[in-house]
Length: 214
Image (cartoon, rainbow, N blue to C red; front, side, top):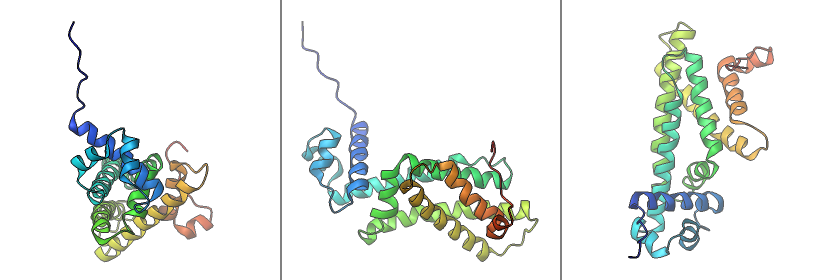
């Protein structure tokens, strides 16, 4: 009887395993402390194979940033159903954002902390992703202004500023939610939705936006 050879793992699958391991190591230890030896060990491959597939630590880190950025943006876009009213669209976008960052804390650490602090090339990758999210949120806010406030002439600069503020708040709140025990993605999304939709004055007066199913 002949020897049965183990089926070789496809390159794409093996590469994703390496990226999974790298995101975990980079996210938990930081770019400087992360070693290719540790990444290879966690991925269950040899270090030369990591270099063969992904060339260098810088290239590996860049690949991690790009993958996590694409996944986050895809999650936000997929979470928004454009047939819903404007407030529901914004709610679902926020919920998708906080759900993704809660489920992938190492990936969020790579994007929001590590990539921003270890060189312009890495930061530029995150900046491009963030610009896509800001542009998407800008559309949601413009639609919300037309639908909810009957104000089709809200100045473009004001809409852009509101989108920047909302995305910045979401980024900070995601850090806080991931670091604070027992804060769920839904709670984080509701906090920001109330602040963005009802406004601080409305919250102080007891007016709140109620999430679906609340």
